[in-house]
Length: 128
Image (cartoon, rainbow, N blue to C red; front, side, top):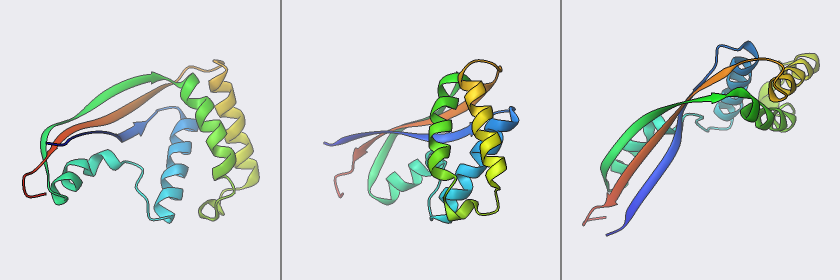
């Protein structure tokens, strides 16, 4: 029998305004392209629709220091800022957001990220 293990993003939240704004922007870009940022929310339903039997599924909360995540976010922002879905965001706002992400990455500001990860284990059903 085939076994499938899936880990997908369930949520990303932060009380820090820079991180919160960044997550809103990423979600807007993905929505504009017909994508879903928080795929973890629908993993169980997707597995069942395709004939997999879910053996285990849970969302695990991870609290992450913002420095390593902010570095990745800053690099990602360089690409996202030119997406047509963010046409309403000014170049000045994008520059300010980038600088704030860099400050977080360098450890000049304290912030945490509430990160939810969906972990699911499924087995192929006999009829799949």
